[in-house]
Image (cartoon, rainbow, N blue to C red; front, side, top):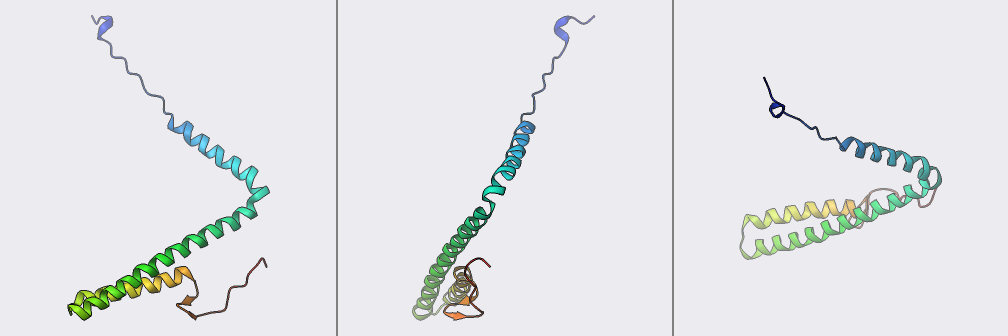
Length: 122
């Protein structure tokens, strides 16, 4: 016959993850219900401004790195006559092109490829 000490007791941990998910979902719904009707339009323009500045910074970094790579590749071609210089120049030119599109969409360097975007709310 089994004694009292022979039984195994299993304690299951309570899953706190579902409670956190519920609170997160409830917080998102409360934010949408309270904040958006009052300040949603302003948030849209603030988000657009933030993204515009972010892409402008990314574009300027690509232009700077691409310019350095083009100069470095040109110096490699002139000094060592290696094909690595040509590869650096090509990668630099690609970075310059990508950076130009990020920094000023619709332009390639100083050359405009389309009409200017109208300013203001229409």
